[in-house]
Figure 1 (cartoon, rainbow, N blue to C red):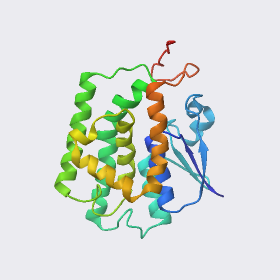
Figure 2: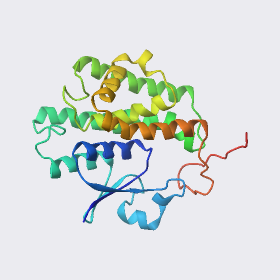
Figure 3: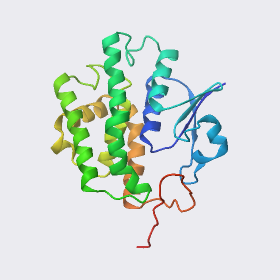
Figure 4: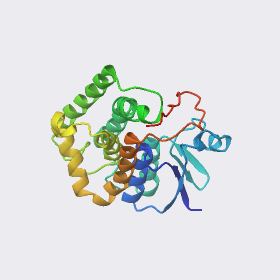
Amino acid sequence: MKMKLYAVSDGPPSLAVRMALEALNISYEHISVDYGKAEHLTAEYEKMNPQKEIPVLDDDGFFLSESNAILQYLCDKYAPESELYPKDPKQRALVNHRLCFNLAFLYPQISAYVMAPIFFDYQRTDIGLKKLNLALEAFETYLKKSATAYVAGNGLTIADFPLVTSVMCLEAIEFDVKGKYPTVFKWYSGFKNAYPKLWAISEKGMAEIAEFEKNPPDLSGMVHPIHPIKKLTSK
């Protein structure tokens, strides 16, 4: 059975997994999940992922959510010798750290500042900006200290994918990464130049986010269990 990935076209976790699949040359079927129609909140989707989050991998009936876990699984099963997920304990620990850093520290602030105000009834606030800058300052420091081309060494790893898709969100709203965080910008630009085929996957998602920033999507048909839906007003 062909591997399936249930994913959206613009979500950073979905894009990170799609980049990994491309980098590992794994054939799969991309099943688009319509976020606006709340397809991720259906009972059918819940059977695959009780968290009702996106993406979900279906590998011949083995369902796996959480993009970091998916990235690790793909390497362990299909490319165990790949340097995308090195076996050396210290190198792997650094990759795992960067994955955790993005999941728990950086992307939550980016999501709250960039994504939530686009899709839901949240505002960009000074405290939100402060939290975002604190996370970006930490990222800048890590990259300065390591002085490596990529986030976990001088070679590309799966840790780069979710961090690229996180920073992509900032570019979509024209946040000044280059001026404020030059080391982050250098790494980000370096990835784009070195891996244009992988970046093309993320770039399409970024274009959608940039368009949604200007023209928020109509989610009035969705009843979200947690987030209040933004009420669109005619211009």
